[in-house]
Image (cartoon, rainbow, N blue to C red; front, side, top):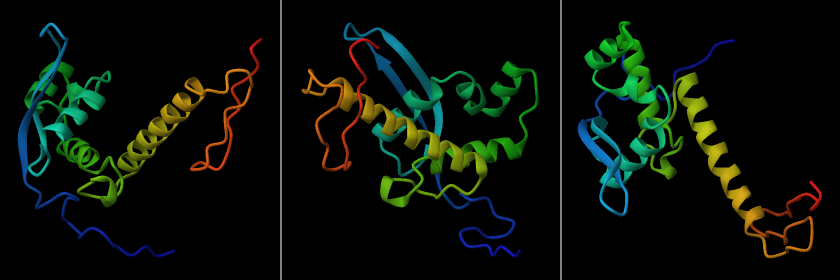
Length: 163
């Protein structure tokens, strides 16, 4: 079996030629106290503050991710292990390609197994959350089934009240 290269060039990183900048993000309580703060997030230069905030708040808050995406020297100090340039490259690619498609705002398509997996998991998480909300907020309270959702082409089984 022979595979032809289609979206990358030999010897070049998937996001080579893209400009990056350092961005900041924070989440505040209504009283102004900071819940989450991340400084110096390396994001594509074209990203808006909203895109930077979504990235930081959705991914950096998850255990272990923020440690790897800080400056390399900081990550190495925190982990006590060296972070290889290959790991940094792959993490950056995962960040810029996690939407998976140009139409969804991704500046690059996923080109590594990790990036494809992240995109698929992110997509699955969003869909399951949407289905959960459809079931939770269904007005058909007396039935174990939701109302018919034409855009999805189906009803959803909510379960019996005894469950």
